[in-house]
Image (cartoon, rainbow, N blue to C red; front, side):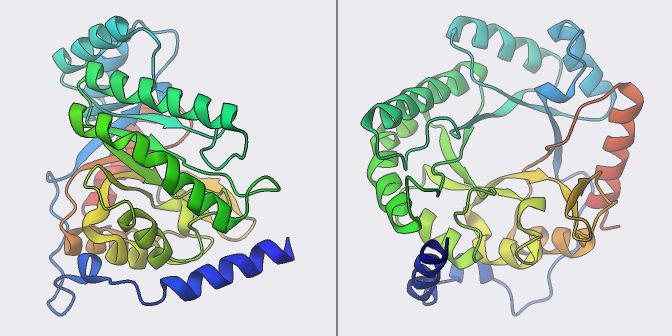
Length: 296
């Protein structure tokens, strides 16, 4: 563990000089206030009651004030197309899908594991197209006894470019999320450099507000990542006791977070990544997000 930590420190030295122009544009001017109605509220499909038929799930989401869905990959692309059409007809189009990548990280030294990961992402990209989505969330690596930080960085920068031609063909963005995988959590500059080294508009950042709170201030990460952010997950975290809580019940400074989003010009989907619930729970969640958007 000590050696891994030192490797990460050395990596940080290399990222110290990274340009923050994309994230700091307009920093000299006063940031505009968040504008209610500009952002789009979405739900992960798994947060909706599992017993409901798909059409009723989408109707419930719409009735609770959401206008988008985040889905999951399906092996059957025809089924994905039908589900996407159903969601679109309900006024809750599927805007992105979560592939993940934990079970077959592109940092693994075993070629068979990497092959599985690339195949999974290939299916996810095609599934996103069938849904009518424009983004696939990817957790590219896991830093553990099989991969140091440097190895994870190098291996993923070798393998992810193999997916970029298909992403470009399908017009689907590969969005890297910062998660608790011992990678890209040391600094926003490190995350920015990681994305920039792909040198492709089809590899960007999926920013999770709550995931960085144990390591830094989300609002500062937003300013550094800037235009690299294409999608956002909403979570809240309480530092005391280190536990996840409902939105606005934790230590995230939501007014400052929304001010930062306004400053960098983000006006896309805001998707909570929480446990699901019934209609009353979802309506309460929708109202909490409305308050967040209003800067409260």
